[in-house]
Image 1 (cartoon, rainbow, N blue to C red):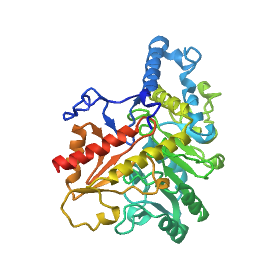
Image 2 (tube, rainbow, N blue to C red):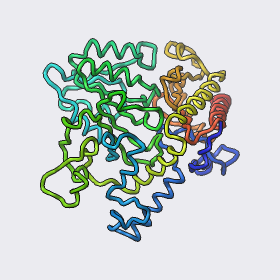
Image 3 (cartoon, rainbow, N blue to C red):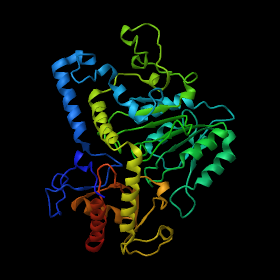
Image 4 (cartoon, rainbow, N blue to C red):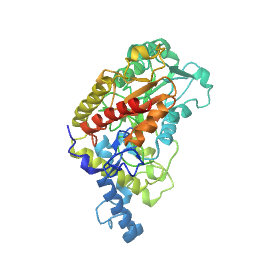
Length: 425
């Protein structure tokens, strides 16, 4: 199950990440953290270097036909958006949080009777920070938590909440894949239920884009936002994106006009009246950072080589399933049903990501017991060359990303975790 594309990514060595206890310091580390920051693709590096040279040799003329690679900066993002979705429904722009504020401003239209926002409890901080919009969060924000003793939300509970409170809900907004647990929410059924009650339904796809197959247009999703530095491997803080369904193109027009959202045919003529591009691209405000856009383009070229998402999803299911099977063979593993009531002080772990492969992406969230064990395990894994992602107080996320991870990575991660328990806990 080795990846034919693993050689197209630059994975840090054990020495470079400070894995002081690893016996092979010059070998690539076991990088299971693409859900937090994807590694650099060689194509991204090459394209960024090309754009740096264009900047040096063409300067301002690189915006147009003088660009030696046919990627004039004035329409650079036109090379990025077609692989993502329909051109008029997607814009490559800004950052996730800024885009979420734009979408909230356009789609959250509270009235005295309909003003509530439904979301999952403990959503990612960017989502939590944008939700109140002038209302008391204690009254306006409906946060859904899992049932007692459980770690993920049940679909039936979400749909019941929407049906019961729908007349008071203005906006339903969830993460496509929940960052902490790795749960992939049933996006189509939630969207359908929300809209049936007259609610707008939007999605934060930070942990879903590049991870799971998405059909935003066909599912009728009103809007979505995402970043590109996780599973999209575009680099730290890279350019983000947003989606606005074409059904809104006549009614939801950008309120915060910027010249990059102006019709390209007259943009550089700089007329006094703003004439927005139809659809999502009209929300653009400023010209994009070319170096980060080039990095994203390089990663998208790798995705295109494997046929985008469906082949990757099949491989993702294999890798995540293999890692799950290996972890559950550990003598330190306990079933998730026992975790919340466990009294023993013996160190252990469970997996709080859904067992059902259709309810998760390329991520397993490991909950360590008792409290305080996780930090010791995380430090020891790092020293042995396994890079996961800690989420305090007690979770480590391991993500076998199908573009660059291999079955060997899964085997190495599980084996070293076992040895950490044996030797240090």
